[in-house]
Length: 376
Image (cartoon, rainbow, N blue to C red; front, side):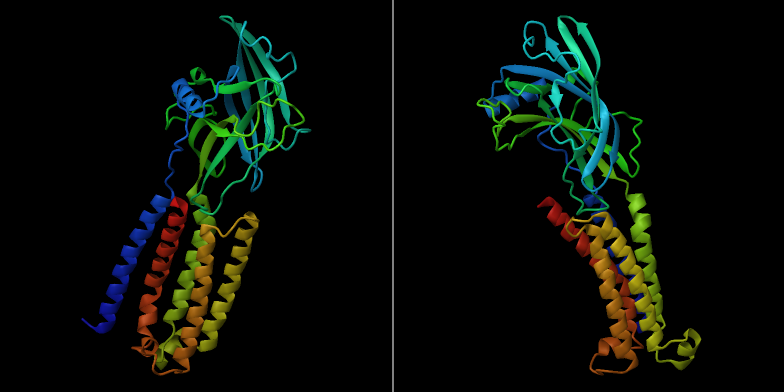
């Protein structure tokens, strides 16, 4: 077996192993860990309140059902659905909302004027009045896009009681849903259209308020450290769309770059057949650079204000490859620095054979690094 054949077989074997490793790392990156703060039943709520040593004057069972969800930008999400509350006779008489009033607030809504919260129904059953409201609001939240396109988004609906002067705690209405376990999806329409997203999980939890103002009231129950009820739904980005839009063009550019590198030779018959020249390879790299740059700018515009995201590292890798191929071609064709045997050995064989192993190894290292940041 010739040296050239051996080197190419080793290159193919290493590339296959690295590709398998990369797919495994992508699987790890796309995995979602359940939030340990999930409330699955009333017992979990009681345990939480006991740990917080909090005994509210009123507890109001509150449920929610989401009918539509739409991301309007990097930090805004449009949500519509129903919220209902149970008010027991003789227990909640002092805090029961009247006609046209809502028993809850959405503190993160941004379009009070164009948004909608209206009473949908009032129904009495077994000494309890159930009041439901239809809402349609845009909520402003902070999302993390650094793992794009393997990112998961936890969209939360933060609920406050409407009575600021009363000590009211909203508790989940678990009985309104068939199942509320750790992996169960509830409170959201199964037919909801989510575009490039798919449902991953839903759950209730409490997050302690960080308010630093009294709102002008001497006694403010919704204070710093107050448990705020959150309904959370986790959505996962559909990888296929992002792969086609971003990864496929980069793979095509890398393949064209490898093809340009394979034309590098000192054998005149091959050089004439492939029309090889230093200027043609560098010219190809220049054209591909602008293709990659425009795609990178388009990606960056979609996540303005976000730190460097996972996908961007591949664009940085492509810039180094374009530069490396150009420098390698110049040194090889000009026979500069004869001591660089790694370039001049057997008609630039080692850089050619190392191209895909270097690309795949770099992608695997980038992915492992991002996973370490994700877990840290």
